Image 1: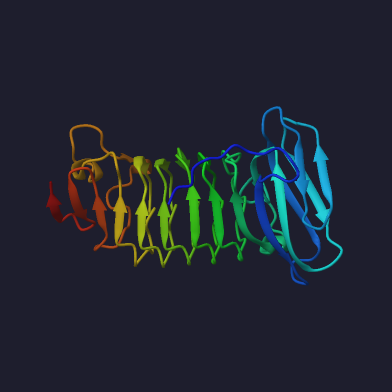
Image 2 (image 1 turned 90 degrees about the horizontal axis):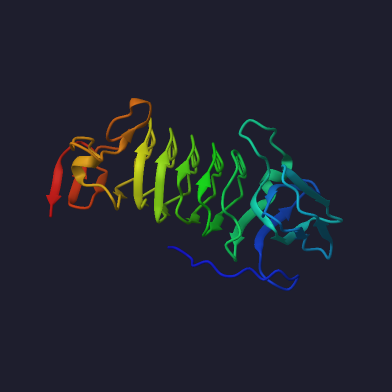
Length: 270
């Protein structure tokens, strides 16, 4: 399901990017966001407890942090950021407050990308909705074991392991997937269907350990191009990867002119 972009209301009473967190004795009371600012826009963060952070526009990596007075659930609302996460790169430290994030919803389309490892091991994250998100980094959501709902826009790239081991994810829909590097959906054991839009590349083991993945829709490739057999226009083999990129043998790839099973059996041509 895609959600249409809406004009962002740059007011304290308006709707920006909403992040629901739950601060507990396990997470602690301290919370920090890592972000890149929207060009020319100041940052405003409403922390949900009556506190507010305001920052002038900056071009570099930026942080905003807050310490809550007591445990509980808080609705954080952010204006003026084009990416928001908990870190910028995969491999940076994990924090106790990673587990505090429950949901992330961009109501006004200000989020245009996601940084590597942004929500890696955010084990209580259930929903990520960013209808204008156009690129995702390495292992942004890896090991988000409760993640069930993802809505993004015309995604041009998923780097290595973007959704690796998201064991609760069942469906994934986007208008365009573009380039997928390795292990993007590896270990998504409940994943049943992928509606990927246009696809340029798959790489090694993108669908490894996805036993329940039964249907993958690709909107701009014939079944010969999906199998990398056509004279031109084939899905590119990242690192030499070949069809079906470790999908289970019963998985169906839906192209523009038919359906081919991962074992190579053409089920239908039309």
